[in-house]
Image (cartoon, rainbow, N blue to C red):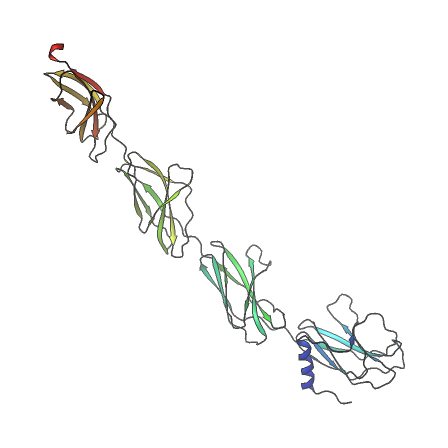
Length: 421
């Protein structure tokens, strides 16, 4: 009988690798019963791929035999003995393909013939076959670090045409041996993977495996380590004014992080509580226009870099306040002389620029009010009093910023009518 050519045998092996099966193959188990007069199998030849081994033998044209039985020893198995993997029920068959094998592994095969009663011939001489080794993973992998909340992997596309994609695995520095699959990239020519939604300043280890057209996955590439971009450092030495009229001025030293592009100012009415966003500032100072006197606020400032990462908010706030009202003056004397009201007072602080006098009186059911402004000095003479009317006076101190104190305690003066004297 003539043997198939090696080229034709490669064709059979390729058919099996694509998922086709060999007809007439029956897999059975059990210990063989040997019958000495049955002819044995000779001249077994082999060929292998990564996951399959093809066997070719010389046909045994003896009418006493029904077919052939094939045994295999897997050196990696625990039993360490031959196991029947196939029964071919046609004595005219001369080929068999063993599939689903491990790459780069040596297997040992033996064959025998069998008759109608199930008796077998003596085993053939053992044939050692090694499957083709698994291809290596990609030769070049690089991790791009210092990206916001992500790490970018790039690699050199594999040259083997059997590669159909890539598997990305990740481990942590704390558990460098605990690899977890992160994703897959389809297409052999693809060369990039973006691992997103990561924390700030976190370190990870990555490797890339190649996925083949038959579903196999190669070993890992050389691992690469990468770190996500850390948050920028906050500004330092935040200060807030306490003596400006109706505004609070903030100033700080810039963040030492080089790519900070602006700062965020937050404000709260209390030291502990929610801080609301107040302003975006590109410099290192900010004036908060409060519009109230003696108003106190607590402030925190963060830094934001060019990628939008914002520094941690400081734990301790800085308190600032607008300039408070001047103290109300103290009236020292109030009297009627020469049909005029004469009132004198003393300032409680040294902030007075001038004073205003508030005069009120009743006309029937209507209360009238008049304010005498820009009084320089601590004495006021009211020459517009009318007899028979009771007047009430209060003094207001005004500082250089126009901030008014609360009115002083009121004093009442009455100019009697001529017939009342």
